[in-house]
Image (cartoon, rainbow, N blue to C red; front, side, top):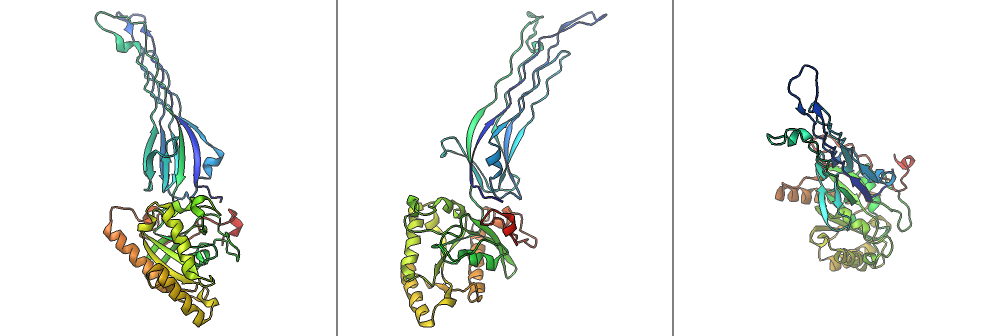
Length: 366
């Protein structure tokens, strides 16, 4: 499954059907008169947040959506049928913007949420509508009103409870594959992760969704490397887990580099609760590890956790800390839907299946 988080679409609602000009003429019927029916209403264009969708890839192959035109009115006061509606199925977390790409129309954050993007045109009145004591045989009817035509931008922002950030090769994908059943591509070279990944983690009977995004480097907010385009996928998270590799020569400097890019991006990321962890601690000597922990503590202003996804050291503790912060955030703001509920996991055992793979090829999935 290829990952696509932005798409441009063109929509048009249906035109209303024209009213009919007709007169009743039947044998042995003493009184005739106008009997033209009204035209049918044009079809609407809707957007719906659907479960089971995780990418906007469908809109790469179809960008134009047009609803049906209302049927024209007919004699014997028969109203035309309404035009067929069109519904755009999008993943939960999709935002709909006007053509300028800045004016937000609707944010689809709840499964099953529906919103009318364009209303169909009203059907025209038939000549029956215009009859009166002084105009008993009107010979005109209204045409149907035209539908609406719009160009829209769809942008997907993943709904997750926790987000992983760090430099390339900080161990984010390894962490995700260890605590969930997601299977991102893992290799020992920078920018192995090219697309966001999601996974469902479970600890002490509590479940939450983790989002992993491509690594950030200095100048990412200016487009360096993969840039900061994927940071939008962690805007909705309740907590950020900032991973710094123990293989970094200066752990404190590595932390500050990513922190600077988060600050430059904005989006409320700096206001989120942050957990700092030194990853890949199994590859360094104890005395070297102590120095790096101290450097990271000075840079972050908090005592970092020490973890190793390979040996499992500290993994349970960091998961429990993530779950604790997420639970507190849910209690503090119960009106906000949790990520597990949005993705259909709440209240039952999670499937914990990978939502995205790195290559976009299904054969890479386990």
